[in-house]
Length: 137
Image 1 (cartoon, rainbow, N blue to C red):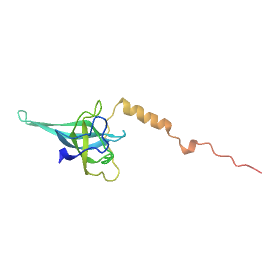
Image 2 (image 1 turned 30 degrees about the vertical axis):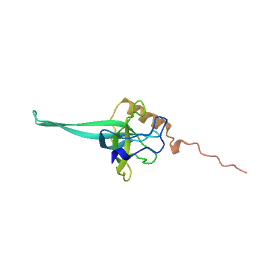
Image 3 (image 1 turned 90 degrees about the horizontal axis):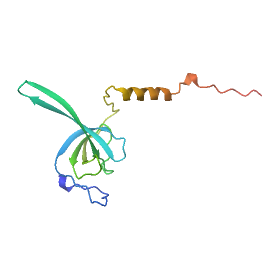
Image 4 (image 1 turned 90 degrees about the vertical axis):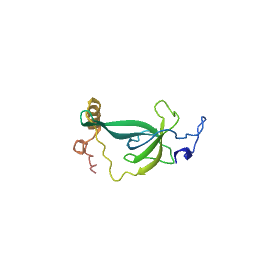
C-alpha cells in the first residue's frame, strides 16, 4: 500500500509520503548518495499510420537507506513531495535485484570520447614502469 510507507529519518519538513503516480523501471545510475536515476521504456501506438514508437524516460528518485537500490535493480517509484530541485519521486520497493555484472548500453558522443581518452592517459602500462635496480654489495 503506497500511503502507508514513510521515510525513517524525516527532515524539518516532515516525512516523505508517496502519493499520486507510480512507475516501474530500472536503476541506470546510483552514483549519488541518496539518489538513483530510474529509466523505463514506453511503446506508443499510432493507429493512423499503423506504426509504433519506442521511447525512454529517465527520472531522478530518492533512494532511502532502508531500501538501498543498486545499479540494474528493477524498482517501483512513487510520486511524492518535492525533495530537491529535480527529485519529486521516491523508491518504494525493489521488485527484482540485479544479478551478476551489470552492463549498460552507452551511446556515443563527444563526452564519452573525452572520458575514454582520459582513462587511457591515466592507465600505467607495466612494460613502461621503471625496473627497480638491485643493490650490488
